[in-house]
Length: 358
Image (spheres, one colour):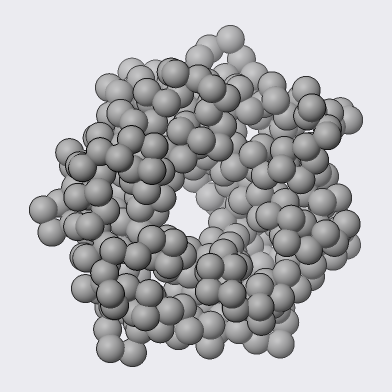
């Protein structure tokens, strides 16, 4: 297959179509977390997932809206659902069982609530944002470390840079930017001589998943743009250039890397691949290094080949979370955030190559 704009546009619509099925299966309340391929259809869909519902809203309302009233309606209904399930203290829960408060997930929901509020200006969205931000600020200690609501207790991982980013995008409280910047600076201490980051995975001192590596770099580069921190932006651009060279040498984007950019997995994390495509396209818009664009397009072509194309709407347009499908990251499963990040990638590729799509 040779990558063409028509193939990207077709894949984008298929990805949106599968997410619409995930929305329907969630009884129009957010988006189902995932579909388990080893179970019968009637019990294969997980419950709706607040975190990813939060950052899918921006895809339906703006990034991939395409002037669709249906897409806008889905995005706003998802925002309404988040307002309905938000804890009175302001947080959103981890996972789909609604047991444990999650700081990272709460921060990701901010993206969707901000998008909905910008478009509709509804008081409930503003109230939900106020509550969520106030709760998040309450989790930050005097030294900038996030102290509770963490994925691993006591582990303030580098990928929380992506949780800090939305706190820098919108200021509701006087101390907000100062506290968020202090947290960012604390994580910035995890840089090294390899243009990577210590503790960029789900577990301390372990290799990072391409999913969390992308979270880490995107959080820092976007925060660097907001704060006009050129040294932060440059470091992240160098990180991505190193990664591009590793991908070219190895002939693949591995699922996991250690801090020396050595591949630590036989499989590929499809979710992370979508994120890296989007991130490389963003990087090209900041610094037009041809290696960013060429690597993004190569990875995009490969990813489109992985998209499921079947008549069955429960499968059509989805992506396996891992390749091969039995890989370590959500084996034999479609997760909704793979589609989310693929849509982000489509959006960013269009910005990099506008004449291609005109």
